[in-house]
Length: 112
Image (cartoon, rainbow, N blue to C red; front, side, top):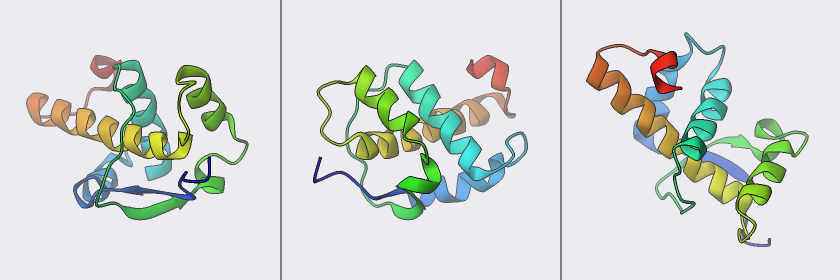
């Protein structure tokens, strides 16, 4: 897993958007974790995202390695689980933003 990321980032668009999500989430980190889970649940296929700006290091995002283990369990073919996580975060934020724009508000129950 030598080509895996040591930091996770957001696209400029998602960097701006995540700040809008602090309420109902306690922090951007919480929103990012939710976005990652949402993308996985929605069946997003792992890929790479480009044009990201670093936001979290691996230890901050996944201090105990549980998210890494989850991604490896769900996608055993992965060679870069943190790269996948970064993609899932950004895709999940895109899903949340689209939902918010379509509904003129953010309803987490509807997303679930």
